[in-house]
Structure formats: structure tokens, C-alpha cells
Length: 551
Image (cartoon, rainbow, N blue to C red; front, side, top):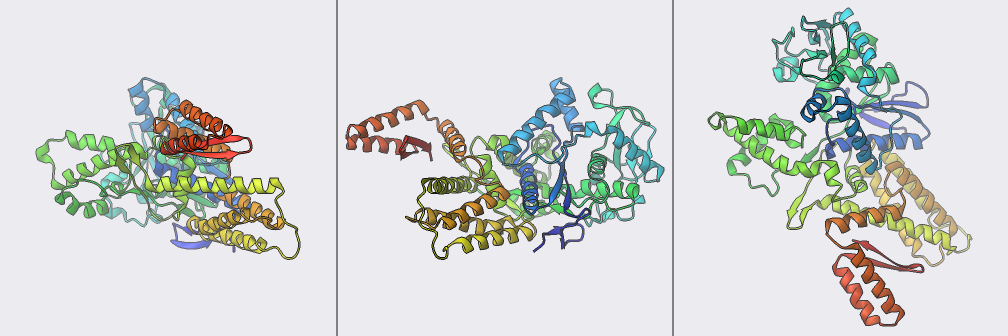
């Protein structure tokens, strides 16, 4: 069936929009590069990477654009604190982002625009909004969007401005804005800000507001009414809402034909937490009123510090409960950072874990503290699953290479089975990118391939069908598609390091065991194997010698 997606704007399933036959234009909001990304940032990277892979495998040309916000207040703050140029900060974290997403198996997008490269287009867009009466400049050199002028404001997030507080206006009334919900299109430069954070404009030196940047970049690369706009759920309001408001009046057409938003990665902060009964009683209402409490945020530490700095006599019971929650979130947060998490689990395992849940559903991040450090049950299970997948690929390749095939006579037993499982896999992804559903036929293909490898003389057509099916499935999901030896080498190296094992000592024990076997000292060889097993080392004897892995 043709691909269908859940459109956040209409809250309905619809066929994949197609502005240009055979092509898909996709824009996904990328990171603001002032720090290392966390697991929540990894989810859209993985989700939309699979979308692109699936559509391309089906024969479509995909113009996938994901931006870098390299002009932002947070970048300036880091630069000022470190005494460096804003560009140096953004370049460092762009490189880190690319490294982190590559570890997840994500391929680079078709284009990766930066805000700093599109300042003239942004200025022109702001000028057009002023000319059309949707924006206004203040005497201080700031420019704001007048939300009261856009009748459909709130249509994506289904929010009524009158029901929102002033906090959502990205700045309080009284700083030159006409309305408390108006948002900045251009920010005047402040005296303390470095030269690398300001550009000339008709309103004086300054820099763009966050929202206008994506409108200008998406239009510059994809034009009007591109097919799909994607991002995380936290971007739906105000970011994507503001993108619509500032794009439609200028271009006279919908910004995007459809919208895809992945769900949050949430943290079970109550599990194994020593919250008081009072905090536990307040938690449901707090999380309902403030969805940010359900996820890890880079701002948790700052928010916690601000609350702790207040006079204790001014803190309400709700404030104290929020402090307890933030303390727990900060505890989780150090491992929620993807770069830190990669010290304990392979990036590809993170990818498998993410794909095990439908992209629109919430996903729970869990860890347990032990004497040996943190344990991530779901992620550890995903890594073990990957070992099985890669082992299956090794077995299948060896079976095909060995020529251990039976005659191609009669009707092959499994060709039709593999072909059907591939169809089921594709159908699941065509149904709003249901990766969780696709993993069922994915697993069945690997299970059938394993059994086929254990058959003494399999039909060569079945082996070829298994190989073709696995090539297709792994290429689309980006799982177990790499070099098995490279996967096992990096996993073993990480486990050796985190367990404080001595690789040279392990090599020596393996050599001793090999010598014992060659000398027919089988009891000694068994003792050495048992010693290695106690260290968590698995031995693999082959024609070329004995290899070892940390398991």
C-alpha cells in the first residue's frame, strides 16, 4: 500500500504528500549547537533517518533537510562564559552532533543549512512581514511578530492564546511588544555580546530570533509547500506554530503539506526514588501542569539552581516537590546525555531501542544504579539482540561462502516465506512508519535464516532469498547493516574498559589455552576457559585460531 502518515495539523492519517511526482521534500528541525545532545534529541534523528531510508528504498528521491541553529542566545552565553567566539562553540558541537548521530547509524541529510549562512534571506523575510503588516520594529532595534494579525495562530497546537500565560510569549509585555504573545523576529545586539554574534540590518546590528530561522532556511532549500515538516513534540508550540504564522503571510501558501512529530522520551523519575509521600501526592498534578517534568532537559540544572537560590520561606509545597523532581532528573540527566550513555552501551543499540516503540508514542528511559555503576536494562537487552543479529549475518555469509548448499531441485521451501516477510515489513513501515510492527517480520527473517544456516544442505535459492531479505531489512532500519567484526570489536573494547579488564592479560590467557590444547592438556585448557568465562569473556575457536569477546 502507499505510505501514509499521521498529520499533526489535521490529526488524521493521510497519503504521503507529493508536490513533485517521485520526490519527497522533508524538513526536520535540527539542534541548537551549544552542548552535547541527549537521548531525546537522538529520537528524531533516528526516526527521520528511517523514513528517508524507507522512501528511498521504495524508489523515491528524498530531499531531506535538517538545520543547525548556530546563532542563538545560548550559544552566545557559552561563548561569553568560555571567552571564545560563538562560531568556535557552534563548530565544536556541530562536529559532536555529527559524531553522535553517526554512532546511531544515521546518514547525513541531503542538506544541513546553518543560520549564519542565511542571514540575508532572514532579513528579507522579516522586511516582508513588516511590509505586510504582520510585524513591527521597536525603537530599540527589535522586531516582533504581531500574533493578533494572524487569524489561524494556534491551529497546529490547538491552543487558544487567551488560555496561555505570558511565559509562552517568549518574553514579557513591556519590552517593546504590543502584545504579550508576540515573538521576536530580530533581536538587537547587546553591549556584552561579541562581534561574532551580530549582523547588520535595517533595524541596527543584531541577530535573528529562533523561529524565523527555520522559515527562511526551509524556504531557501525546499521552497513553498514542501511535503513534510518534522520534529520533536516540544517544537509543536511555540516553534512550529510560529513558523506557520510567519511563513504563510509571506508566501501565501501553507508552509508544509503535512507535519510529523515524534513522541517524548520520558523518564520514570518515581522508580527507585526516595520521594516523600507529599511529593508523590503532588506529582500527577505537577506533571500534568508542566509536561517538561516528564522529560530530561538541558535546563534542569539551571532551573534547580534557581529554585535552591530562593529564600526557603517563599517556597510552596509545589516548589519543594519540583526541587525533588529536578534533583532526580539531574541524577538521570548525566546518563541521558548521548555521549555519556555511549560509554555504557553501543549507539546502534540505542537505535534499536528507539525503533522498538512507535515514533509517536512516549518511550521510557530507565536506569538502575548498582555497585558497578549504572545499568540500562532495555538498552542492554537491545545490545544483546544486536549481537544475535550480527552473529546471524556472519553464519549466513559463512554458509554461502562455504558452498554448503544442496541441489536446487524441486520447489524451494523458504523463498516464498522470506518474500512475504519482506512485504509485511514494508507494509508496517508504510503504515505511519510503524517500526515496532516492522521489527516482528524483521525478527522472523533472522530466525528463519538462523535455522537455514543449521540445515546441512540448504537449497541455494533459500540462502539467496534469506540474504536478499536481510540486506533489504537492515538497509531500511539501519540495524546490523555494518561490518560484524567492527561491531564486536567496538563493543568488546568498551566492555573491557568499563569493567577495568586487562586486554593483554586476556590475550595471554587465550594463548596459554591454545598452547594447552595443542599439547593435549585438555584439563588445563578447560580451567583457562573457565577463568576467562568468569571474567565475562567468550571464546570462539575457528580454523584461523581462537578469538574472544567480552559478553
